[in-house]
Image (tube, rainbow, N blue to C red; front, side, top):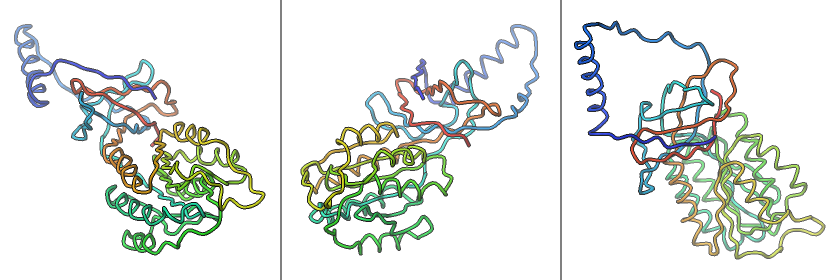
Length: 309
């Protein structure tokens, strides 16, 4: 999805602009000696799609006080009718590293994850780990107090391997039954070393789930301790970074356990400003060359994908 910026000279607020348009139309009617009968356009029979995006002002500050009238969407040369706009509230899976390399980092991970979960609001959240083997500790049906209880009681890191991609695949599998248009997986890893077997085969299920993958990695821990004898390590971190970019997520490298909190704050800030824009499309049409614009002077749009309703 490509995003463009539409700017125009605006005086006053949105209500003033609408009032001026109505006044101008009335003046034109009088001058031309004609009259208009205003009728609503015939409803377009079709389906809808939803675009996920953020809007920032000229100083790169997020804008969330927006309405449907503030946006313009085109697919190719065709303008689309905006149906609704609201702040995103899609489900999130948080996965913590409990492999051997995470023994020292785990307490800081847990505290950072607790603050992150509190910050992203009352959206569905599930919690899991990706030691050996990866496991889900809660489901989306569990209430937030139970989730926090499981987080507080998370077992200490074992001597086993860290299976980041295998854990991400488990998170994607957990998200799939929700049927959510958008979703996210947040991985906290104590090391850039991933001992997931058959790593290449795990990429497709993660991508197919359509989830946004965010990864926070402590780059200071490069020891292969706990990877297990005979277990092939995954490719270089560049491959994981590429996967994160493909899903429009964030890959963050830190060098101290105290930085997990700051890294998760950045992800929470983004989630708090993401907007879901639903728009009408013809039945069986394809989302090709989608362009999202905003009518707020100087503002810019960044898109994170389009999904069918």
